[in-house]
Length: 320
Image (cartoon, rainbow, N blue to C red):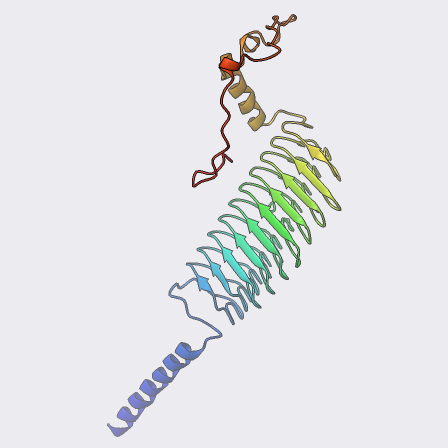
């Protein structure tokens, strides 16, 4: 009987010691979800927050200090050191899933904010916003095709780097690779979706790209690379259409096909009523011979001259 009690005591002591070890081992947090941190050194040194079914794979989330959503950062070395070393990173749901996806993003004093369903490909968004830079990536953006890599890698990297990428943009092999590295890049929604579209755009200069633009192979490649460039909505959807651009392109230009945003603007223009307030000329726009207009009086009669008051500068202020 004595030996049985001894065995029971030893077993209980072992269980208590193991529980204390788990509770005090800060290098390997034990999330409430069963499918988290599975893999060699997964979550070792992790100090952020984590959703369900995330950070699975060898060294996934290793030394990371990121806010990770659900079903994210799954893959060998996915999100390694993300937001670490004085940086900050936020990763949405179903993002950064593949080998080295989002690794070092926002690391070393940088900042990275990644939306939902984004950066799902090998090395996608790797080092985005690293080393003092800043990267903001919207939803459903920066996804390489299956088996391919490098979408948005190095975006907004470096002490002077900045990249702001909208929703449904930069999906393609090397799409938006290096964009805004040491420079500034602003990319709208539904843009830069093709092989190398917008790669190196705004790498050391400044580039602004509108919505539904640069959707073709190498469209807008190196735009604003060593200077400034601006591209309107629905523009440069032609292979190499705005290659190495260092100027401005307006809306709905340089297209092989008319983008949806341009068709919407045409429909809106056609629905617009005549501008009667602008005078009779508004009713007859496009006529071969304009209507004559009355000759203005040389001097307005004194009795009808409007009184001029100084502008208000009180709480209302001037119209902006």
